[in-house]
Length: 363
Image 1 (cartoon, rainbow, N blue to C red):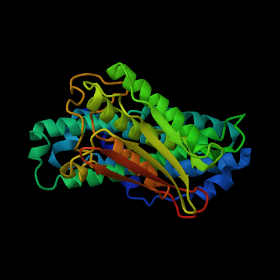
Image 2: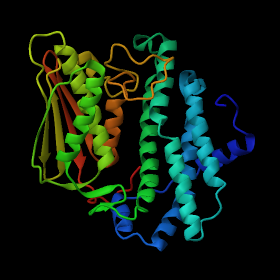
Image 3: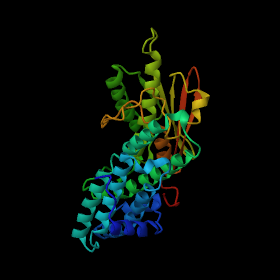
Image 4: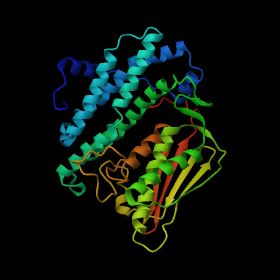
């Protein structure tokens, strides 16, 4: 049960491991290490993860126990805390990885851990919604509430790192990888293709919600490719296009005018690859622009009901799509900027660093 206290022995071990220093891994190293996976390199990687993952997971479990305004006591937050403690316990109870059989068993275990943590973001978002409701809504936020935003930035960034480490190791076991794919890293990823698929997925959600969806027009070089993690880019474009589609749909749903398309432009720059997503959905008021990167704000008028089980993707509600997308961009040294013209529309600029150029350790 989420409300049960963590056993003393486990709590002490979590505290001990959480105080240890984590080891950063650069993307270039991950690409070179995984370019030709062998039994020996996979064994070395598993041995590294056996020591590294408990440190990172323990830190997150400890963070969840010391949140202000009583957030740590919310049932949703307790549930997530228990997931991290269970995962810490699973890895720590796994014996030393000595051979191929151990490595394969360890890989299966961390694969299950990754599945266990699939719903961490929406579950924490639910806890934040519960807190907002207790505090009387966003206009009643007390001083110091920024501490929660800063915590969530750190927490989610670390989560991206943990999932990247696990996902990369699991993916290296694919017996038949696509050409140019190293684990999760596609060395020849087409941003045009990813943008098209993500847009189709976002339009499907919009169609389900409203019965229709604006078009999405994509411009750029269809032959252009660069190294990146495809699921990361899909998530970012999906979230941004979803927001744009909702804004346009809601602005034009009772209008005689035809809803204008959302436009995506992919630009290949010398330093960055930039993806611009533009809409004519009316824009965001200047007073709200500074809040769109916080986890305590949503442009949706009716967020999902706290008492409902919202397993599927909704058009909007919890207010974490934009800040999470910025973290994914920043994880590899990129960024996300939002420029709005109230009364007209919004432009989102997704700046993506070319992977493999940096030897800086990832968070």
